Image (tube, one colour):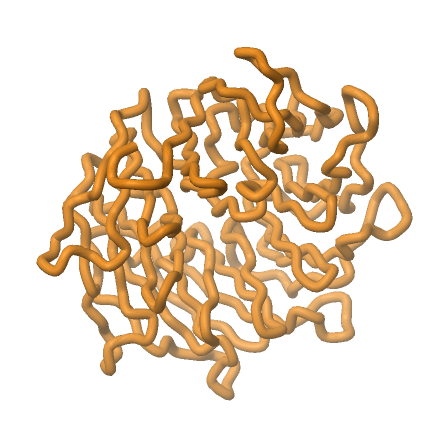
Length: 379
């Protein structure tokens, strides 16, 4: 059975105990839904009260979603959206249906392949990528029917869209990669083109290296990590041509970047498979290839997790099983040691941290969700 579950918060550490506030869900990075311990059972949703017991039953669960759930949920205006491997996007009432098992408010018509991408909701629309190489756009309120067709899609691209869309300034950005490891970053008009299938406003194509990372946008610049070991920065407005070059790139890190960037206080943070966290000036460095402002000391394994920044601290998981906390401003003499690390969990932290109400949450492949106090320098 593959389903989506809603829980009241309880003080449990098992994988079937979900995130503990709706605010967490609104800020969940792409990877968090990917491995919260039991990806085949779907993503579980939590609101803030608690059940007063050691083990909490769900407020509600969905009917079977037909296949595995790797997509992370998005919550907007009382509706939960999530994609599944049965090729569909589903929308549920976040408050449930008054019963133990709830049917969706609506579901999309099938896309052409699996959905690994996580949805993004903006201006009354839901954006999501599919492994069929298309971006799909639906009305967030549905269509008045049980099965809704997209308002528009992108034209078919040459790759898998496992990257999750970012919407800013009237544009939607999404990355892709194909079987030959070629990648493309796409920028579309967020309002479509007046036709069922739309051409991008601009693209950046990269031979020999793809984009698994999801883009992030700040101050008119799009940032995305690449499998060629580098961070890329683009003018979100494009370059006046259909094919655009980056404003700047990072110097290569020591390995591929699957992590997605987080931007705070003019700095871009991103993890690399070389075991390190990197911090770059979001404005660049005055040249086309930029060194980091600072790097971390190496964690014990590759970093697939995406960073989260709160309270002047950057949090990121490592495949060594620990959560790491670094001073956002660095240390003055990099490489910078962490402020603190968690004790090792039982397996890799591929999940990306989420922060809400003074607590940082991260899931582990050991089938558990962990919560750490946000303040101070010790967990």
